[in-house]
Amino acid sequence: MHPLDSRPVGPGVSGPAKITSLSRRDAVRLEIRRAIILGSLNPGDRLTEARLADQLGVSRPTVREALNALAEEGLVTKQPYKGLRVAQLDPAAIHDIAVSRTALDMVAVEAVLNDRTGAKFATIERGWQTYAVNVYNSDPVVQHDAHLEFHRCIWEASGNFLLEKLWPVTAAQLTIALAEDQRRRSDPEREYEIHLSLMEALRTRDFDTIRDAISAHTLVSADEIVAMMLAERSSL
Image (tube, rainbow, N blue to C red):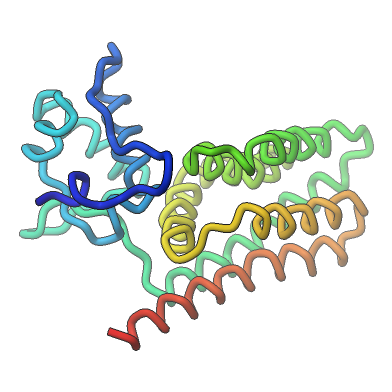
């Protein structure tokens, strides 16, 4: 039985549905992405065109196009002789991503703090409002996307060209890491409090305070995910 057919996706959350949208490739891409976020497809799972086409009610070429798009985003990897699989991150990669994100976040923050008009900070506030409104949404994918949007707005606010170009790849890696976290624990209240602390630090407009908050937010979260992954492996 294929993972999409057999794995639960949580109370009140349905699995992938038949595709009826005219933009079939994008609809298929979003359904597979949803399955990855919800954990009905786990990191390393093999993805076969025939199985997905049958389940989603679309043609194999449509599935192929969707999988290629997901591969470009970084959510799916192509491996010689092994086909397509859901991307996976080892503990070292999760740590490396967290360290790099911390540095890039501070590049964004510095640009925002140097803006005396307040326009850049307003972009961060917009991202926060999106997150705050959706953090308790009954759909975990809506929660996830609001989480990403908050962090994306920090980079967008900077107006930095390179950060804008790096975001799609970063978002894909975050999606995999957050899916690892979500699979082991789901606590919207905890997530809200953590992000509220970060937002309150940003509102101080103090560089050192923000740097400490971002380091704690990103590096501690990564360390927690790694610890859970290693504990799970040692118990096998």
